[in-house]
Image 1: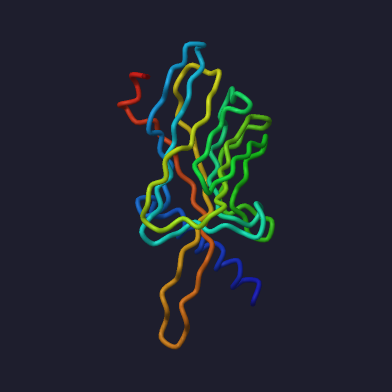
Image 2 (image 1 turned 90 degrees about the vertical axis):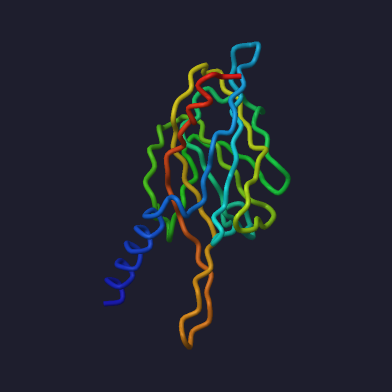
Length: 183
C-alpha cells in the first residue's frame, strides 16, 4: 500500500512539475554573438517564478541547478557565470532525480557537452539572473532543451505547517526570432 502511494505521489509530482511551464523557472537565450573566429557566444538568462527559489545544497550534488543539454562544439573554458553560481559540463547532463530515478526525461545525446549551472548562494523568487555565457564552434543556431531543480514552498494546510519541496521541470530552450540576425 505504501509503495503504491509513493508511486502515485511521484507520478502526480512529476506531472505537476511539468504541467505549467508558464509558472516555472525559465532559461532564455538573450543574445548570440558571432565572433571573428567563426565561433558563436550564447548569452543566457535564468528567470525564477514568483513562487520558487533556488537554494544551494551542502554539496554541488544537492544544490538547485539548471542544465542545458547538447551544446555541441563547446569551447573549453569559455563558459562564464554570474556571482553565486558554479559551472560544470558533463557528457551526461545533470537531471533532477528522486532516489536515483530521473524525474524528467530530456533528450541527452551521449558524449555531447551539457551546460550545468549550480547555485552557490540563494536566489530569490521572481527575479532574472543574467551573465551566463558559453561559446561554441558550431555556427548555426539550434533549439535546445533544459531541465532544472528548484525549491518551491507548499502553502500550509489547516493544522499542518508549510513545507518546502524540491521540484523538477523540463522545457524547450527556444532561440527567439529576433536572434535570427546574429550580432
